[in-house]
Length: 382
Image: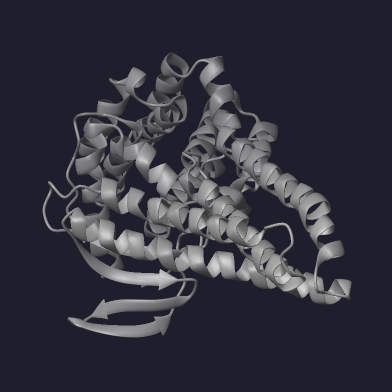
């Protein structure tokens, strides 16, 4: 299990634990003193409070994103609250229903220049929702007074439940942990490194170009290496590999490999896997075997097999198929193929599929009886 996935599970478990304890203690006690005679109507009362909290959080979070983006010198491209979408097209604002990448919504922005500062965009939404939660708690406190009527107490606990819901959403959004959706906490952690602020703006620009159909978008290459700038550089690598410019791609990969201490081991390992793949597929079979024997020791072999990314899988297949001649190891790592391919960003899938199929075909040519060609990824034809 990946470190980020483990951390996410811990957070989910804590959220569930808080909800269960709150329900079994605070809400159970209140139910006995409330104006509700049926447990079903009380459950609906609680659901109404939760929904109020979630909707209030979603709206105010995106309001904060919009205000923060304006303060940081960005253009607003679209605003999503759940699937409700307000977006700009042909210089006109339109309304529709679309998917989004976020907890309860997403505000897409575009920097006006390289000096645009994302800090307010990433922070203001959380500050506003925190103030909202405090406001709801104040309403609870002022209505939870001894001697008040059951209706007043019901109002108090409605806002307490809504406040707790907002607080839980806020914690999820602000923690600097990698979840399955983008959060402000991830972004704040990223831009806390000054090197990443310009890269963050470059990512927004590149994504905007890709969303508008520009498959050959020009991407700046960053020489100051962090995990984030390495990921942006990798986008440039994919463009070069699409054009079969292996030498130019290797120069960018070397920026990461020569700054190993500036990135996580995962980023380093995947960059190394890309470079090894490039060397193997551009060499003769004999030279490829010699290169692997010289540069890929037993520890690297293990690490490639453990990393469930397509770039490591195809490199490991080449190593085991061309040098170690292990059908078992090839099949072992290929069991993660579908999951790894789904994890590839859509704009990289065509390139990844072509590279993976090239690796499979090289091994199949040497070991046709292994029938690894059954694992070829179907590619779209223009």
